[in-house]
Image 1 (cartoon, rainbow, N blue to C red):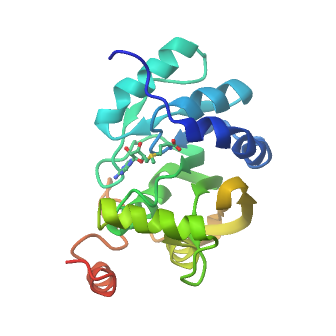
Image 2: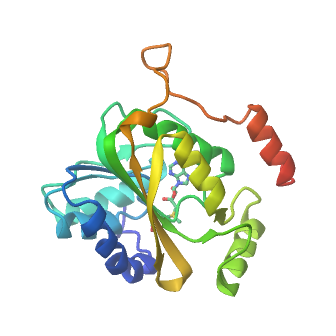
Length: 232
Ligand SMILES: C[S@@+](CC[C@H](N)C(=O)[O-])C[C@H]1O[C@@H](n2cnc3c(N)ncnc32)[C@H](O)[C@@H]1O
């Protein structure tokens, strides 16, 4: 590819996010990043936190851009990016931390559900999950700019939109995750941090490689949500 992809927002938000990761990823070793985008965050965080192996991932079309950032940086703790669509096949490896920024409002709600359905298969006990992005609370946006952003997402694609904290936290709890922090970030964003509790691990799946699907596109819960959202 010619040139590296570049997202100005990453340059603005990476410092405040790093402060959260320094705290919550202390003592962690293996991070899976979901929806790495350009790869800018990965290079910045992996350089600042050299004790971590920072595994980038995204849908296949994003991988050349991520590779360009990783190759240029030449860091020892950034393995080649993985092709990971949360609705597809997940890595067989396990991680003690997962990070994802600005992805939930881009994914469809079904994909958000599949993201949380996939997490138990890759998280070890006591693993941390950090999600960064805009969230609404009790159906209300936290700022006029987030409301305008949500409207612009809907206008771009009906399946996109700012997610409500309570609905995301409900999915997280179903995946055995307990919220440990909800931190306000600059520009009306949040960092949500969960820990995976051993006691709440869901029952072992019947098939050796089966992963729990909490609500796939054909499930009742998913259909109810689509109906409520006015989506087919
Ligand atoms: C707004 S970008 C954010 C990228 C980067 N994390 C950042 O903060 O700049 C959203 C990312 O989510 C990824 N994404 C969207 N749907 C996905 C899916 N179903 N599975 C995995 N990644 C997905 C996109 O490819 C894109 O890289």
